[in-house]
Length: 140
Length: 137
Image (cartoon, rainbow over all chains, first blue to last red; front, side, top):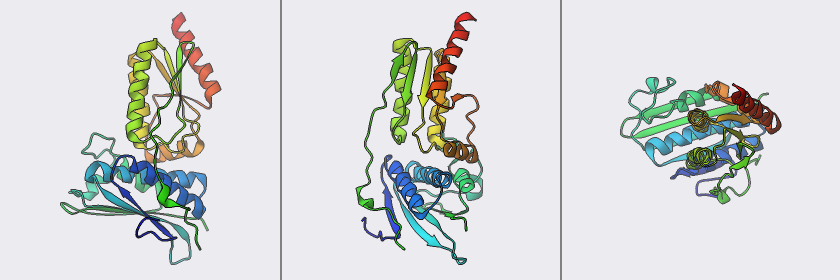
Protein backbone atom coordinates (compact mmCIF):
# COMPACT_ATOMS: atom_id res chain seq x y z
CA UNK A 1 0.00 0.00 0.00
CA UNK A 2 1.26 3.51 -0.74
CA UNK A 3 2.67 5.51 2.15
CA UNK A 4 -0.03 7.05 4.31
CA UNK A 5 -2.60 4.59 3.10
CA UNK A 6 -4.46 2.40 5.54
CA UNK A 7 -7.24 -0.13 5.19
CA UNK A 8 -9.79 2.65 5.12
CA UNK A 9 -7.96 5.18 3.00
CA UNK A 10 -5.86 5.30 -0.12
CA UNK A 11 -3.61 8.05 -1.42
CA UNK A 12 -3.08 8.57 -5.12
CA UNK A 13 -0.55 10.99 -6.48
CA UNK A 14 -1.44 12.90 -9.60
CA UNK A 15 1.78 13.42 -11.54
CA UNK A 16 0.95 12.63 -15.11
CA UNK A 17 -2.08 12.51 -17.29
CA UNK A 18 -2.63 8.78 -16.88
CA UNK A 19 -2.92 9.19 -13.11
CA UNK A 20 -6.37 10.63 -13.81
CA UNK A 21 -7.39 7.16 -15.00
CA UNK A 22 -5.71 5.48 -12.04
CA UNK A 23 -7.52 7.85 -9.69
CA UNK A 24 -10.96 7.27 -11.17
CA UNK A 25 -10.46 3.49 -11.27
CA UNK A 26 -9.46 3.53 -7.61
CA UNK A 27 -12.52 5.64 -6.75
CA UNK A 28 -14.73 3.20 -8.65
CA UNK A 29 -13.30 0.25 -6.68
CA UNK A 30 -13.77 2.04 -3.38
CA UNK A 31 -17.31 3.09 -4.24
CA UNK A 32 -18.12 -0.47 -5.24
CA UNK A 33 -16.63 -2.02 -2.12
CA UNK A 34 -18.41 0.48 0.15
CA UNK A 35 -21.65 -0.65 -1.45
CA UNK A 36 -22.75 2.09 -3.82
CA UNK A 37 -25.02 1.10 -6.69
CA UNK A 38 -23.86 1.34 -10.28
CA UNK A 39 -25.29 4.83 -10.92
CA UNK A 40 -23.67 6.25 -7.78
CA UNK A 41 -20.40 4.50 -8.63
CA UNK A 42 -20.52 6.23 -11.99
CA UNK A 43 -21.34 9.63 -10.44
CA UNK A 44 -18.43 9.26 -8.00
CA UNK A 45 -16.02 8.06 -10.69
CA UNK A 46 -16.99 10.86 -13.05
CA UNK A 47 -16.62 13.56 -10.36
CA UNK A 48 -13.22 12.16 -9.41
CA UNK A 49 -12.14 12.19 -13.04
CA UNK A 50 -13.11 15.86 -13.41
CA UNK A 51 -11.32 16.93 -10.22
CA UNK A 52 -8.19 14.85 -10.83
CA UNK A 53 -8.00 16.40 -14.28
CA UNK A 54 -8.22 19.87 -12.74
CA UNK A 55 -5.18 19.02 -10.59
CA UNK A 56 -3.28 17.80 -13.64
CA UNK A 57 -4.30 20.67 -15.93
CA UNK A 58 -3.97 23.58 -13.50
CA UNK A 59 -1.43 22.55 -10.89
CA UNK A 60 0.51 19.76 -12.60
CA UNK A 61 0.89 17.81 -9.37
CA UNK A 62 -1.35 16.94 -6.49
CA UNK A 63 -2.79 14.29 -4.28
CA UNK A 64 -6.08 12.48 -3.98
CA UNK A 65 -7.17 10.79 -0.75
CA UNK A 66 -10.01 8.29 -0.90
CA UNK A 67 -11.63 7.34 2.41
CA UNK A 68 -14.55 5.40 3.72
CA UNK A 69 -16.31 7.58 6.27
CA UNK A 70 -19.31 7.65 8.57
CA UNK A 71 -21.27 10.78 9.49
CA UNK A 72 -22.76 11.64 12.89
CA UNK A 73 -25.99 9.86 11.99
CA UNK A 74 -24.11 6.64 11.38
CA UNK A 75 -24.51 6.92 7.65
CA UNK A 76 -21.60 5.44 5.70
CA UNK A 77 -20.11 6.99 2.66
CA UNK A 78 -17.10 7.93 0.61
CA UNK A 79 -15.00 11.06 1.00
CA UNK A 80 -12.47 12.07 -1.64
CA UNK A 81 -10.04 14.94 -1.09
CA UNK A 82 -8.18 16.60 -3.96
CA UNK A 83 -5.25 18.79 -2.94
CA UNK A 84 -2.73 20.72 -4.99
CA UNK A 85 -0.22 23.49 -4.49
CA UNK A 86 -0.98 25.03 -7.85
CA UNK A 87 -1.78 28.64 -8.74
CA UNK A 88 -5.08 28.64 -6.87
CA UNK A 89 -8.39 30.11 -8.02
CA UNK A 90 -8.80 33.92 -7.74
CA UNK A 91 -12.58 33.79 -7.36
CA UNK A 92 -14.03 30.47 -6.29
CA UNK A 93 -17.62 31.67 -6.63
CA UNK A 94 -17.05 32.54 -10.29
CA UNK A 95 -15.16 29.28 -10.87
CA UNK A 96 -18.21 27.36 -9.67
CA UNK A 97 -20.20 28.71 -12.62
CA UNK A 98 -20.59 26.39 -15.55
CA UNK A 99 -18.42 27.43 -18.46
CA UNK A 100 -15.73 29.14 -16.41
CA UNK A 101 -12.38 27.91 -17.66
CA UNK A 102 -8.91 29.22 -18.34
CA UNK A 103 -7.85 26.14 -20.28
CA UNK A 104 -10.18 25.96 -23.26
CA UNK A 105 -12.12 23.09 -21.71
CA UNK A 106 -15.87 23.19 -21.16
CA UNK A 107 -15.65 24.49 -17.61
CA UNK A 108 -17.77 21.67 -16.25
CA UNK A 109 -15.33 20.15 -13.79
CA UNK A 110 -16.16 21.96 -10.56
CA UNK A 111 -19.90 22.60 -11.03
CA UNK A 112 -20.33 19.13 -12.55
CA UNK A 113 -18.60 17.37 -9.67
CA UNK A 114 -20.72 19.35 -7.22
CA UNK A 115 -23.96 18.35 -8.97
CA UNK A 116 -23.04 14.66 -9.03
CA UNK A 117 -22.12 14.42 -5.34
CA UNK A 118 -24.05 14.87 -2.07
CA UNK A 119 -21.62 17.28 -0.41
CA UNK A 120 -18.94 19.51 -1.82
CA UNK A 121 -16.32 21.76 -0.25
CA UNK A 122 -13.75 23.95 -1.93
CA UNK A 123 -11.09 26.26 -0.62
CA UNK A 124 -8.44 28.00 -2.67
CA UNK A 125 -5.81 30.64 -2.20
CA UNK A 126 -3.95 32.32 -5.04
CA UNK A 127 -0.34 31.23 -5.02
CA UNK A 128 -0.95 28.48 -2.47
CA UNK A 129 -3.24 25.95 -4.02
CA UNK A 130 -6.67 24.41 -4.00
CA UNK A 131 -8.43 21.73 -1.98
CA UNK A 132 -11.70 20.19 -3.07
CA UNK A 133 -13.54 17.60 -0.97
CA UNK A 134 -16.50 15.57 -2.19
CA UNK A 135 -18.79 13.18 -0.31
CA UNK A 136 -21.42 10.69 -1.31
CA UNK A 137 -23.54 8.88 1.30
CA UNK A 138 -25.11 5.46 1.10
CA UNK A 139 -28.89 5.46 1.30
CA UNK A 140 -30.14 4.30 4.72
CA UNK B 1 -14.90 -2.84 8.93
CA UNK B 2 -12.36 -3.25 6.20
CA UNK B 3 -13.83 -2.69 2.81
CA UNK B 4 -10.93 -1.17 0.95
CA UNK B 5 -9.98 -2.69 -2.39
CA UNK B 6 -7.07 -5.07 -2.30
CA UNK B 7 -3.60 -4.31 -3.62
CA UNK B 8 -4.00 -0.62 -4.36
CA UNK B 9 -0.25 -0.49 -4.99
CA UNK B 10 -0.61 -2.35 -8.26
CA UNK B 11 -2.57 0.34 -9.98
CA UNK B 12 -1.36 1.12 -13.45
CA UNK B 13 -2.71 2.01 -16.84
CA UNK B 14 -1.60 0.45 -20.06
CA UNK B 15 -1.61 2.37 -23.28
CA UNK B 16 -3.61 0.49 -25.86
CA UNK B 17 -4.58 1.36 -29.35
CA UNK B 18 -8.25 1.23 -30.21
CA UNK B 19 -8.91 -0.75 -33.38
CA UNK B 20 -10.78 0.97 -36.19
CA UNK B 21 -12.49 -1.63 -38.37
CA UNK B 22 -13.79 -0.94 -41.86
CA UNK B 23 -16.95 -2.77 -42.89
CA UNK B 24 -18.70 -1.92 -46.19
CA UNK B 25 -18.48 1.87 -46.34
CA UNK B 26 -18.36 2.64 -42.66
CA UNK B 27 -16.02 2.26 -39.72
CA UNK B 28 -16.61 0.51 -36.42
CA UNK B 29 -14.67 1.73 -33.41
CA UNK B 30 -15.15 -0.43 -30.31
CA UNK B 31 -13.84 1.38 -27.24
CA UNK B 32 -13.08 -1.41 -24.78
CA UNK B 33 -10.74 0.27 -22.34
CA UNK B 34 -10.84 3.17 -19.90
CA UNK B 35 -9.46 5.87 -22.20
CA UNK B 36 -6.97 8.35 -20.83
CA UNK B 37 -7.18 11.87 -22.27
CA UNK B 38 -4.23 11.48 -24.60
CA UNK B 39 -5.50 8.19 -26.04
CA UNK B 40 -8.93 9.78 -26.52
CA UNK B 41 -7.57 12.67 -28.53
CA UNK B 42 -5.30 10.30 -30.46
CA UNK B 43 -8.32 8.16 -31.28
CA UNK B 44 -10.11 11.23 -32.62
CA UNK B 45 -7.25 11.89 -35.04
CA UNK B 46 -7.04 8.23 -36.00
CA UNK B 47 -10.74 8.16 -36.89
CA UNK B 48 -10.45 11.25 -39.08
CA UNK B 49 -7.36 9.87 -40.82
CA UNK B 50 -9.12 6.57 -41.45
CA UNK B 51 -12.15 8.38 -42.92
CA UNK B 52 -9.75 10.20 -45.21
CA UNK B 53 -7.83 7.07 -46.17
CA UNK B 54 -10.83 4.80 -46.77
CA UNK B 55 -13.53 7.21 -47.89
CA UNK B 56 -15.79 5.80 -45.18
CA UNK B 57 -19.10 7.66 -45.00
CA UNK B 58 -20.08 6.60 -41.53
CA UNK B 59 -18.52 5.81 -38.16
CA UNK B 60 -19.98 3.76 -35.33
CA UNK B 61 -18.30 4.35 -31.99
CA UNK B 62 -19.37 1.57 -29.65
CA UNK B 63 -19.11 2.49 -25.97
CA UNK B 64 -21.09 -0.42 -24.52
CA UNK B 65 -18.31 -1.39 -22.11
CA UNK B 66 -17.30 2.19 -21.28
CA UNK B 67 -18.14 2.76 -17.62
CA UNK B 68 -17.67 6.50 -17.51
CA UNK B 69 -17.89 9.45 -19.88
CA UNK B 70 -16.69 12.65 -18.26
CA UNK B 71 -16.68 16.15 -19.75
CA UNK B 72 -13.40 15.52 -21.56
CA UNK B 73 -14.43 12.29 -23.27
CA UNK B 74 -17.89 13.74 -23.91
CA UNK B 75 -16.32 16.73 -25.62
CA UNK B 76 -14.04 14.48 -27.70
CA UNK B 77 -17.03 12.38 -28.83
CA UNK B 78 -19.07 15.46 -29.74
CA UNK B 79 -16.14 17.03 -31.58
CA UNK B 80 -15.40 13.81 -33.45
CA UNK B 81 -18.99 13.74 -34.69
CA UNK B 82 -18.82 17.33 -35.91
CA UNK B 83 -15.39 16.89 -37.50
CA UNK B 84 -16.49 13.70 -39.25
CA UNK B 85 -19.59 15.51 -40.53
CA UNK B 86 -17.28 18.06 -42.15
CA UNK B 87 -15.66 15.13 -43.92
CA UNK B 88 -19.07 13.81 -45.01
CA UNK B 89 -19.15 10.92 -42.54
CA UNK B 90 -22.01 10.42 -40.09
CA UNK B 91 -21.17 9.31 -36.54
CA UNK B 92 -23.34 7.04 -34.41
CA UNK B 93 -22.52 6.39 -30.77
CA UNK B 94 -23.82 3.01 -29.69
CA UNK B 95 -24.38 1.14 -26.45
CA UNK B 96 -24.22 3.86 -23.83
CA UNK B 97 -24.87 2.30 -20.41
CA UNK B 98 -27.82 3.71 -18.39
CA UNK B 99 -25.56 4.88 -15.55
CA UNK B 100 -23.35 6.71 -18.04
CA UNK B 101 -26.36 8.41 -19.66
CA UNK B 102 -27.72 9.50 -16.27
CA UNK B 103 -24.37 10.87 -15.16
CA UNK B 104 -23.69 12.71 -18.43
CA UNK B 105 -26.99 14.57 -18.26
CA UNK B 106 -26.58 15.37 -14.56
CA UNK B 107 -23.10 16.64 -15.30
CA UNK B 108 -24.67 19.06 -17.75
CA UNK B 109 -23.24 17.66 -20.95
CA UNK B 110 -25.50 17.79 -23.98
CA UNK B 111 -24.66 15.42 -26.79
CA UNK B 112 -27.84 16.29 -28.62
CA UNK B 113 -26.22 16.71 -32.03
CA UNK B 114 -24.99 13.11 -32.09
CA UNK B 115 -26.79 10.10 -33.52
CA UNK B 116 -27.10 7.36 -30.93
CA UNK B 117 -28.20 3.74 -30.98
CA UNK B 118 -29.03 1.34 -28.18
CA UNK B 119 -26.58 -1.29 -29.40
CA UNK B 120 -24.23 -2.12 -32.24
CA UNK B 121 -26.91 -3.88 -34.24
CA UNK B 122 -29.25 -0.87 -34.20
CA UNK B 123 -26.27 1.37 -34.94
CA UNK B 124 -25.56 -0.61 -38.10
CA UNK B 125 -29.23 -0.34 -39.15
CA UNK B 126 -29.18 3.38 -38.44
CA UNK B 127 -25.98 4.08 -40.31
CA UNK B 128 -27.06 2.03 -43.32
CA UNK B 129 -30.34 3.97 -43.41
CA UNK B 130 -28.48 7.25 -43.12
CA UNK B 131 -26.08 6.32 -45.90
CA UNK B 132 -28.80 4.96 -48.19
CA UNK B 133 -30.86 8.09 -47.60
CA UNK B 134 -27.88 10.16 -48.62
CA UNK B 135 -27.28 8.10 -51.74
CA UNK B 136 -30.82 8.62 -53.00
CA UNK B 137 -31.02 12.25 -51.98
